[in-house]
Image (cartoon, rainbow, N blue to C red; front, side, top):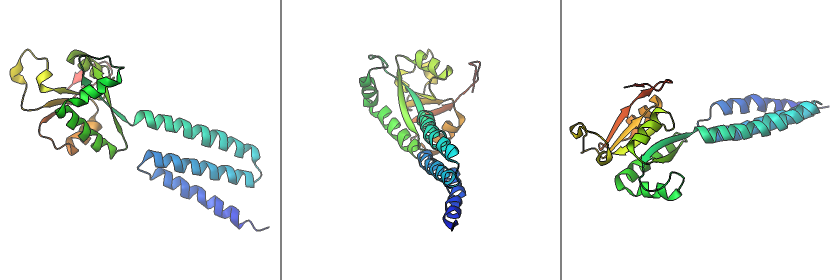
Length: 203
């Protein structure tokens, strides 16, 4: 019996595995991971291990891909806290009102363009006032906040640069570095804060 085809199928395993680890796009990696599992299941079946092939097909491929897809979908999101005064955070019209501000709308469009390169989504999370927005950042509900300069609550307004349209605060170093490198608008004041697990802020 000629077993050459088995060797050819076996050679696909390291090839598919190497393609998985070299993918920049996580969704492409998920597709190739599915192909890897299917090839492994077929190889086990050809070698007479039907039970192992069934386990690989159900658990190693279908279940694993589903869990990975959920994890990738939920983790590749940059949550941006923004201000809204009138509607509840669950109302979809809130986001339309937030984006209606031309300055903030332009910033959001720029951020979406930047993070699309990293296969990430920018999700707007509205809060009723600046105190709630700052608390959300400290409690790690959002990754960054954006407050128009004209809406900053400050007793000493001399410390606020009104020539800058938006003040953006980021608590994750990598996100801060991406925005700092790729966002070219001079009207955005970008600040990094290190929020510890105890809720303390280190500038």
